[in-house]
Image (cartoon, rainbow, N blue to C red; front, side):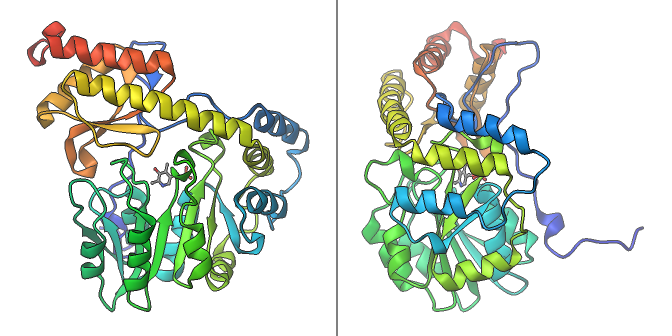
Length: 366
Ligand SMILES: *Cc1c(COP(=O)(O)O)cnc(C)c1O
């Protein structure tokens, strides 16, 4: 038996399972499992990425100044209180590394994003899962779960994988009610899909106990580059910058993200297309007996009668080259999370689910 052992908590981590992207034996799959933008990034972002290819031998800047300025201008924020990471996942990791540890608790919601628990355990903290009310964040329950050991409270708004969101007034109530040593992290990965929503930025500006995380992986279509950001009070940003590696974001990622955030016309186009096909998808599914909550994101959480039915539908969709996301690991075994794709992908998914429902394919034949 080796005496070399990791820190307590590490072996309790169940490794994160990303959305599948292949089906054995099928060439042209439609991937609707990772909430990627079917329209891809802005052409300006692609051009900036290509230009960065000429200076691969150079280290990137460590202050991320140009990207901070671009984000601050587009979102109306204070550039000095922005931090960039290799995806917002890295910002979440910094937060746990800095504020959580053995003897502290990290609160997250029942169907919250898997990285909160993973990073809490990696830091040696105890993750605390709080029940939702019918797949909606329950602020009262979160406040009731807080103790004098609570270090961080993670909440995605809108949430993944439920797609639901709570009002700014509710979020404010949460921030105001937290114990004084606790920091609220508002994960705004899907904020750009909600017209006119600031992701909690105004609340960050008003308070000392709220941080917002954002990403370039969703509406900006740059998941492959790994770039995200956080916005918080100066005392928090100062702490996170102390543990951030100097070159945690590549030049290509910084340049592509800057071009992407400045191309507000492309962002608006993606938001509008997503809203249109999201409504179409959820309505068409509802018509064939598959309900979902009103989604504020770029995916729909489709609810089936039983876990067995969801599993059988998932297998049938796969056989048709359509990859969606089973969410059993999020305690939603009767649901499938389906990214809103382009028109043809949405039509193919609905067609396949309808065929399944009409008995074109049943459990026993799979
Ligand atoms: C996709 C997603 C992220 C983004 O992660 P990145 O590391 O920025 O790619 C963060 N939070 C939630 C809830 C997400 O769904």
